[in-house]
Length: 125
Image (tube, rainbow, N blue to C red):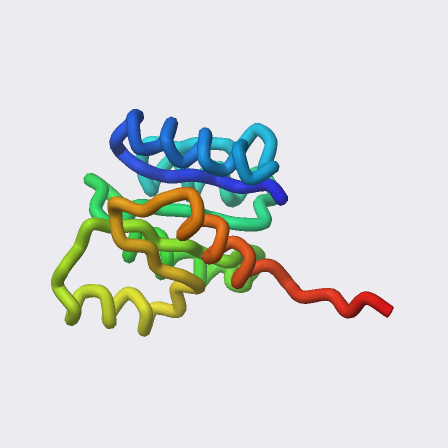
C-alpha cells in the first residue's frame, strides 16, 4: 500500500512514517502542507492519504474537500489525524466523507486498527 503522510510538523511526519514502516508499509511519502500533498496526489498513485487537520495554507478539511471533488482522487481513503476536541468540528470533517479519524496522541495499535478497517476485505476460499 502506497501511503502519503501530510503534517506541517516534521516530528509528527517522522513518527507516523516509523509507525507505518513498523506495520509493514515501506517508504511512505510525506508532504509538509496540503498544497504540496495535493500536487503529489495528482502526479502519483496513492492507496491512502493520512493528513493532519490543522495546517497552514490548505488544512486537512480543505484538502479532503479537494480530494473528494477530484474525479481521479474521489475514492481515495483519507485518514484524518488531529488533536481537535471540538465535537462540532470533528462531525463536520466526518460529514466531509473522511474515511477514518484518529485523535492525537495515538499509538501503534490504534493506527493498525484504523488501517485494518480501511483495507478491502478479501474472501479466502
